[in-house]
Length: 397
Image 1 (cartoon, rainbow, N blue to C red):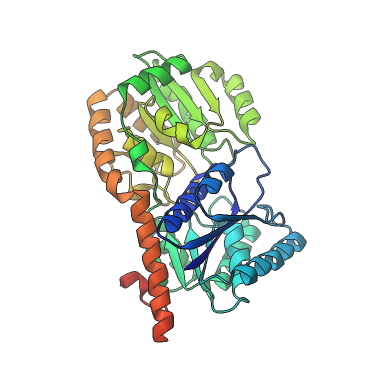
Image 2 (cartoon, rainbow, N blue to C red):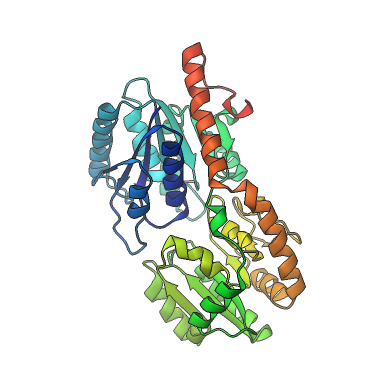
């Protein structure tokens, strides 16, 4: 099949890693794959090298940017129409909020191509003010009318989309975001190395966060919880993996709180290094205000690290209380601190939760399984075309 994947930008992030792995897997399965993305414009790093290694044909569309700019966005629609007409794909598969709306608008005007969209996280969410939230919901409803199938990275995404009237439930299929699970494994040698690099001793308890240093990733809630954690667990240390536009703001805030020396910021790291860094953690802390299904939690579990997370979006589908980690009410920094302290003071619980998490995630989040399930959706759409049927009931077949 001829398949075009479209994503807003190839920064280092979960949706982008998912998309590149999908393209790589589809190429390996003999499909002709084109990956279209806009340029990176920030400090979050780039996955273009990984995309180049995937075997997909790559096209950069300069007009496709994350910020809403109506004139430039219309130019992006026009540019994508040109790409789609040149490629003449059987399937256009969009990812991320901006590209999802623009690509589906462009694809609706091009031939008989089937349209698939992956929801990595809702474009309208609790972090937005009234008008942007209303606008994105309206645009998603419009795009939903021409979308043959939706892939959700968590059941929570399907539920939120159906409740918002985006499309009927039968068009949604949950496919957990795959990753190279064989890259993640507990390693005592790796643990010693990375902790030495961080200046952390064997007796310290490392609470690690992997996320862009960006608004809505929950660093405000983490900083609110830190004083209580450090008071009750003096040997606690925090490690933040990632970079972003808010780094300077967060560093100044930590300095004002007198906590700058208790947090090690790694800065931007290559995606392949995350698996090693996870070994240096004792607890994975995830406090994002909105997410699909947090890949950092899965990566931590694969390294046998327990998790503490807010109970929003897809987190409850991987963090099972008293089994793989601790869930706390969204936005409650006091309860977040309590959960971190409970795990920090109980090594046996940390080990038990981590091992359970690894068993859960090894199969469920394997990237080859993800690609196989996505390919099945494409094949089902193709069969519906040949039989003259619609796309209803795809998720149930």
